Length: 202
Ligand SMILES: [Zn+2]
Ligand SMILES: [Zn+2]
Image 1 (cartoon, rainbow, N blue to C red):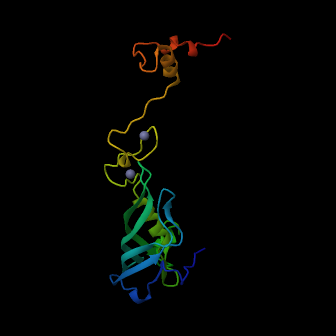
Image 2 (image 1 turned 120 degrees about the vertical axis):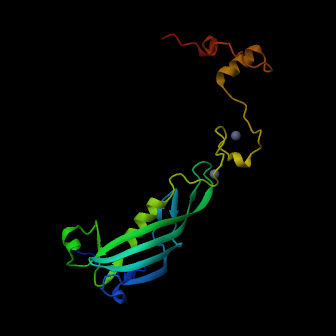
Image 3 (image 1 turned 180 degrees about the vertical axis):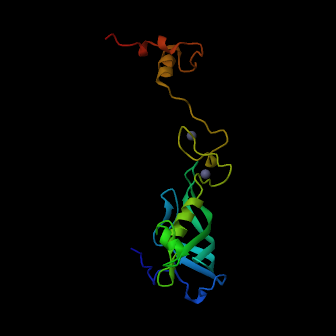
């Protein structure tokens, strides 16, 4: 079963003007609006954005070779501070679409190698797959993003350089009440000796 490309889809290109003489070429530059996000929740080219296709169609013996670049901007969150960020994504496209009846079409599966159907090629799956692979795995808002404070979860970039927290440990509370609030815990002290933490007799 060959999937028939939807002529109205902006991802579908008509190869008729290319002709079938091997070696003939045609540049294609189009902006395709994104309807379904390309990527994951944390980072994706969002609906409403455009993918810019800068491609070359080339007639080869077995079909049409589509090569070039797909570009878009992905929106997501910084892997360290979770702030919103925008990253440019560039994917390299190089995909053969086989003519029906060609040796390639006879010897391969349609999900391995696309097909030219009614002189049309549908680039959507190819471009989506390549763009997802081109997305950075751990995008950063800036290369030296300091991330979040491990105590309060605020972005360290927004906090004072000397930002710190009083460490609240219940064992230390018990020691404080024994020795007075002004004194810190004895670093040599054994927390197991704290009467509040003695194991209950079973
Ligand atoms: Zn960040
Ligand atoms: Zn903090």
